[in-house]
Image (cartoon, rainbow, N blue to C red; front, side, top):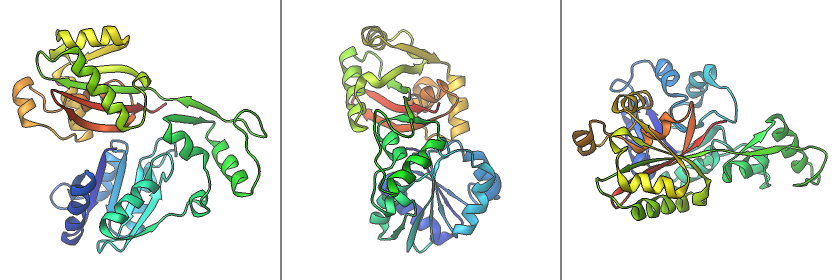
Length: 297
């Protein structure tokens, strides 16, 4: 999950950096990274998986209101006061993961977690949380509310038949891959397998592989794709750089010096889809870097 942490004050910046150190996330500060929060939020709203505001809840609500589309695609939105007393799950609590992220951050900064989704308050199963955990898209989304309401009312639900029928569609998992020259097929397989284990998914869920076109003659990578039975897409440095700029991706100066672009795996994965959500941001496994991206359907 890629996280943007926005602060308006110096006190907020201190808290933002503390959070970033523990769970990752890119810190953006008013006056340094943006002047108009309204414009900046519009720019990044669909580019990050989670947006964490360190400000008053009312400010955050006004900032995100024009950009909200659907619980199936909106990022997780969390609001924290600059003293770190309350951490509020504001948007996309289930599918976006805001509720779990709120609990995680609250433990780190010793804040009061504020979660208002009914199923969580009542400590009951929810259809959308279940779908999100296993990389599934609920269809149609209107049934989420009906099924969750039935659960809250104590009605029985069934996985094979019942009053309402909701399809759960598997999302495509895209693997962005960066690697050192001459890396073996076995090391790439091991890296991808371990990456999938981190998100509790079998390696077979990966549908597409992606990398930079400079690696299009990399024997280990080509053989891995062939034997794994998956298409591998290669993208130019210019295409990757465009995604780096658009999504404000972190860059490695070492990688940039060697191949001309400072982020391969995340940028390549993003080049494969019109929109997606990171299941795993860049992770280094020996000579291989992997990122895993769920495609938004």
